[in-house]
Amino acid sequence: MSAGRSAGERAAALRAQAVPRGLKRRVLAVVGMDREGARLNAEAGRWAAGEKGERRTAAMLVPLGAEGWAGFYDRRIPGLDRANADHVLVSPGARVFMPDSKMWHARARVRVVRGRLVHGDVDKDRQVDGVLTEAEMVGKALGTAVTPIIAVHNAPVDGGGFMLRGVPVVPADRLVELLRRNAGRPNPAEARRLALLADRKLLRYVEGGT
Image (tube, rainbow, N blue to C red; front, side, top):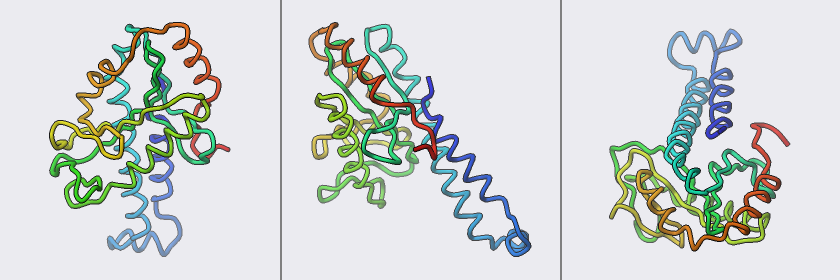
């Protein structure tokens, strides 16, 4: 399982870039004014949080393997150069789901404000557009409908979960329940075909790869 690998690699690369090089940046770092280093470290922190969320979600999904689910982690999305799918799951009923992990701080709620996804006072609505686009592209590659899901770690989610523009937004600890409930009637032949296709079409994501 390689969940979170590319996010971890990106975080490490950013931290390496944040190390002051050159006299000017070293002097600025000494006096606490290396803004470029601070920016890079902050971005690295976001990628590291993403890695942690992806790994947590992957661990939650492990029991589904014994129930006939196929899981693919950290895969490239055809047609989107720098996008990767955290998790692509094929149910025993031949339904395809794309949970997208979000590690958001617990100090604010995730909710809908005027039709937009918000975490506390921060607008996160582009996350909804992002998962819809990614699911559409994966669906084109596999020739089937793909359901995106936003799975939120740490932050409380209004109502224990809600739908926004067709995307379920749920606390991560409710993700497996949601997947089981929507697995569909068993269709082993079609599920096997889709799993083989997903493994062939969705290549492993390599940070900075082409």
